[in-house]
Length: 430
Image 1 (cartoon, rainbow, N blue to C red):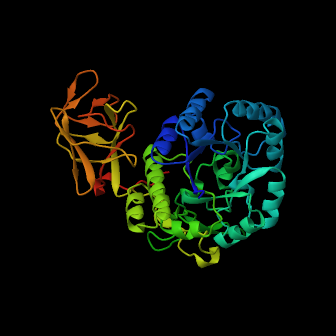
Image 2 (cartoon, rainbow, N blue to C red):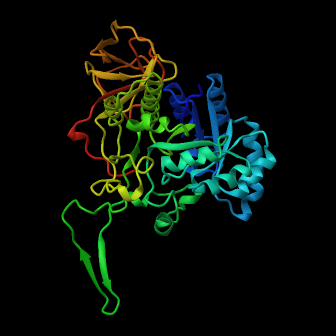
Image 3 (cartoon, rainbow, N blue to C red):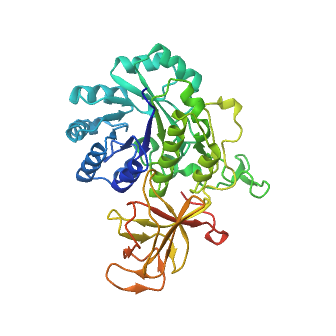
């Protein structure tokens, strides 16, 4: 049986490795202005991206390169060079958005499979057929499409792979067709530099052009402030329904500029949900509990399993971003011997450990600290905060760039987390 693919974002080399270690079958990312992941793409250069591809391939995973921008005529020469360069890194597919770039990529690198970006807005069999005939082997469906429509596309084009978004930020506009950021800050969404202006709070006014009078429209406090702010997509509780449809080849997690913890938790939860499906079981409550540990804008199941006109809860009018139930306090480095502080750490603090599925841990109690299991969860507490340079600290905060010794070797990219408290506040900026 061919199992569905779990596809995660790779904003930089660290997040690429984290997504793979936490369960992603494939990752996607880019390195240049020809990617809609321009801001995260700046964190990759050719050397680090090649290192990421090699890391993935060594573990039997895949890397898809985003070349899904909308180039001007003046950029076509550079685009051709970029496609050839990226092909030389031996990725597993290109993600492109326009017919012209699709054709060009096929001419320059005919051996690289082509995936059609969600920016192409495929919503029906006719468009899917056109792009398939042009060489697209997979379509990344528009977020507005329904599962029923995807089933019909698969019936007509059984060899065409279908990829759908199951988690992440939702665009206020129709699959990215937005100019608000362009008007307000000159950052063009369809060229990869959206400023997320839809996440800002707005005040509304009514103007009378004849008299020059301007009236502020006052609403009840807390209502209508974030008038364009979409909730985050979350389909973890619908995996069975999606996979039972028999038409989906890849489940995609959005995450253009998300944190490493997001890359880990989303990969871990959806890996578990997918594996549970094939094992004939499901635990939606546990999936949602874990996803709620992350910062989010509130969650919605959006349109894949519901029609747009049936949904009236996809906007969050009260805030742009809120803390999750937990705060990340540290992360284990790649050596597995040290951790880096991401919030604050004191001796004798108890922190929960989050690590890739299948990792083996053993309890330990020594002069550095203690690691133990309790009620199915692993915890860590430090007796002393010993820096790599030998200095002992009485407390550590996120601005401290030292690495600190662990009681024993832990799986690299293990996270420490603590329950969030009111004093941590509400995050209101993306």
